[in-house]
Structures are given as C-alpha cells and as structure tokens.
Image (cartoon, rainbow, N blue to C red; front, side, top):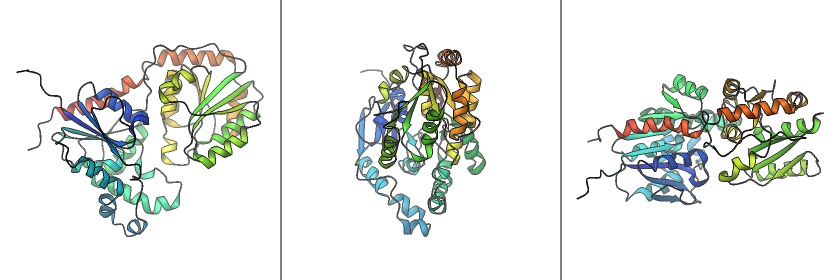
Length: 384
C-alpha cells in the first residue's frame, strides 16, 4: 500500500474563459504542481487542470434583472443569476473540495456556499464596487449590489488578494477587508534580452480596444510628434465598433499600424521586437486611476522602455526601477511632449533597466503571495 498522501483538491472558479485569462491561468499553472486542480469557467480547459467544468457560453455572468436591482433584491439577483445556477448545476455531483480559489467578487458567494473543508481564498482582482463608475446607471443600480456582495461575501473569505496597493487600501478602508497584493505580473522570460533601438523609434501598445483606454489620444500624439517614432497597436476586439473607428483613423497613416491580437503565449516575443511600450490610461474611474495592468509587466518582460501617464501605481514601479518616462497628463499634447524629447540613448537605457528588473517584476515572484495564502488555508483543520 502506497504511503503517498493524496493531494488536496483545489477548485479555481472564474466567470471568464480561463484558458485566455492571464491572471487566472497563472493560478492554475502554479497550483497544479501542488494540488489536484479543478477549474470552473467559460471556454476550453486550461493547461494544468485535472478536470474542467465548462460553463455554457449562453449563461452570462453579467445578467442582472433591472427591476430586481431597482428593488434592491440582491439575494434574489445573486442566487437566481444564470451563471450562478449553471455553475451550481455543474458542481452538484462534485466531491467536497479542500479549498476554493474564487476570482472576482461574483464568484465569492458561490465559493462560500460550497463549504470547502479548509476555506476560501478570494482574489478580487480590481476594485469591484467602482468598476464601471463612469456610467451613472451603473453607479445608481449596480454598484450598491456589488457593495452588498463585498459586505456579505468577501468579508467572510478566509483570505483575500487584489491587484494593487491602492485598491487593497480602499477595500480595507471601506469594508474592513485585509487584502494582500498580487500584481498582474507576466511570466519571467530569461530567453529575452534588450534589442538595439531602431530609427525610427518603434512604440507598441497591446490590450483591449475600449473607449476609456485613451487610445485616440496616443494615436493623435504620435501623429503630431516631431520625433521619428512609429506606433503599432495589437488590440483585442472588445468593442468592435470602436475597433472599426480606430481602423478607419489609422488606415492611411504612415506612422500608426493596427495589427490583429497575438496569443498571450507569443505576446512577449512579439513585443520584444519594439523599443518602447506605451500605456497612458485616463483616470475616468477609480480602477483606471489605480491601474497596474498586465501590459506594464508584459513590456518589462519584453525588455522595453515604458511610457505611462501619471497613474500612481505604475509611477511607483516605473520610478523604482527607472523603466521609462511619465507624461504630465493624459491628453495627446502631454504625450507629444514626451515623444518629442525621446532619444535612442534614453530608450536604450530604459531597455537595459527593464532587463535588470525582469526577474524581480515577474509573475514567479508575485505568485508567491497566492502561494502563501492558499498554503495557510491548506494547513487549517478541516471544518467539522
């Protein structure tokens, strides 16, 4: 008879296509080495999962009955949502899990209801109560519902993490939730190194095609600059109408080129052919203001210098490692001032600094925050 102790069962839930969700995929890949990982989410099974429970594409997590929101029937909204009911159906015959790792606020109540033997870790990602606060209907009707989830569910999680210190501070101040910080760092790429700076200096931006990301300002800044610079965009079709407008804007440009997105596995290698990464995101919401996004870390792993706006979390990290330059504001004119002052020598120095910081700013370092939290849960005595 073998003396090997069975691995604890860890359920990772996310109302996202996990195989394409960089943050959640890092959790799966890491914990598959230590636990029997079962995943539950949309899309295909992610690598590392021993079993994947796929939520049907026609069971959207964001569906909320408007009349119930108006009447503040939050318990009814949550437990009768299509996604929650579909997920409960998938999990109905599963043996009890030792640990559940719940991603984003909408999965935390479900995770608690499963009553895992040892506990629930909630990775809340961004600051959920102010996620879409630029829209008044969201502020009036959806935000109170999200705050209800934070009070009712997130406070009861065994441990909590989020993506940045400013967001963690807000969870603590508003809800009394003591959240750790696990940034959206990218996997370490020891095979990559800084490439020589080109002429013109090649700038790149990768990410979502969303209207609140300041892409129009970046494009206008590049077109107006007196420096020899180009801009390449790799955009996900989050908003097809907006993506089409960008396509029309740049179709006759000799400076700006729009590309199809590349798989995340190929992103760092693709980015490494450029000189500078740019992300100047206007603070139209709380989460935009405190953004420290995965693309910032993608640029570092690609060994690029970085151009950012005065976003506090990004500024803190960029300044600590001297990775690039901060614009005075978020408008095209602010960005153009920085572009006009670029030199190949400055860009080359930032690329070398990114190379020096790549290991320290890698996912392998940030994952240890999750590792410690889940390990602490794994050591707890099983619930009676």
